[in-house]
Structures are given as C-alpha cells and as structure tokens.
Amino acid sequence: MPVARPRELLSGAPASAVKLSAAALAVVAKERGFAPLEIEAELVALVADEERFAAGRLEVIAASTIAPVAARRARALLGEPTRLDRIDEAVVAAAQRRTGCRITTMVTSAGRGGAWGIDERTRSVWLPDRACSFADRPLLFRILRAVADADGAIDKEALVHRAWEQRDYHPLRDDPRLHTAIRTLRRLIEDDPARPTRLVTTDVGYALGRDAAARRARSG
Image (cartoon, rainbow, N blue to C red):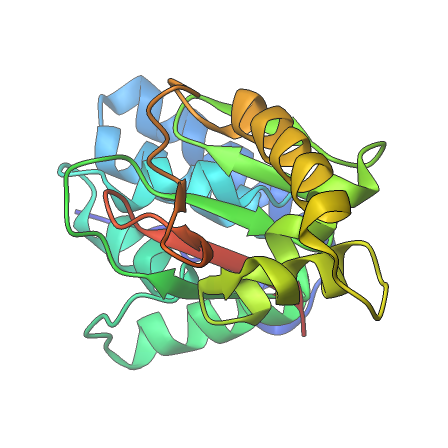
C-alpha cells in the first residue's frame, strides 16, 4: 500500500504546496477506500507548517491501529520512544523543522487515560476531547508551567514563588489563593474536578498525575 510522504514535505517547499499535495493524496485515498493512506495524508497536512499544527490531533493519529506508518511517526513527534526507519526519521525531522515545535513526554502513563499536554507556544492545553486556551489566564498557565519545570512535582512554597513571581511565602496569606487557583485550574483541565487525575495533590504540594501520559510542547 502506498505511503504518504509528499516530496514537498522533505524538500522545504512552501506549506501551501505541501498541503495541496496532502489534500490530493487524501482525495485519492478516500476514492479508493484506503483509510491508512488518508490518515497518513492528514499527518502530512498537519505538520506542513506551524500555523496548522495541533499537538492534540497528533494524539489521535498516534493511537491509530489502521495506519501504522502515520502512527509511529506521530508517536515520535509526541516524544515517545519509537523505532523508526530512515524515511520515518527524515519525515519526523522535516515535520519538526516546519512546525518549530519539540514535544517531550513528562509523565509516562500508568493507566488507560488519554494523553494530554501543555503547549507553551500557544499557551494552551490539549486534552483527549478538547483544547483549552490560557491566553487570558496567565496565572493559571504559570502554575502549570511551574509544575512542568519542576519535573512534574512541586511543593507549595516553590509553586507560589514561581507562579506569583514573589520572593516570600506566607502560608496564611498564600495557601488560600493557591487553593482557589488550583480549583479554577482543575475545572478547566479535569474531567471531574472533584477527583483530579491530571493535577493531583501531594503531601507537600502538587504533581502531574500518572493515570495518563503528560506532554509538553515548546518552540525549538
């Protein structure tokens, strides 16, 4: 079965040419009933340039069982250890150059939950069923980034220092507003804020949960 790897993606052609080629492949795949090729064409279009790139869609492609080529390339782009051949490596490298994005997996899943991630380029979070923008919620995004910067677990004092950008920490003053911010954040990123799985409470502070893989997208 043919594999979608338009020459334009690897050659540095304009994004418009890559998208046009991918769209043509998708049409052919749909007409002939080649679902795997259609998914591969979608991946090519997705990574054609930074403007269209959405890490959350990569998660869907990476989970595909009918398009193994696209799935393994998507997993590699998501920062998961994946066995690649030379063509895969070239496609992944070209995609990273075009999107200007590097994704790392901060927490490896210990459960069956859908992966999610923090996108620092767009100040947003992608979730299995939706995306959430934090463009107008800078404090909440700083909280998430502070936890990520601390390798996925942070104590309350350090979190207050980083999120509120202040030197001193006073529990009586700072804990109430921290708890309020965490509750607001959980309402946005949790499926059930009363039973958080993505941002959990620890003995000393907060951590990324291990029910699902947690990722981080940055420019680079």
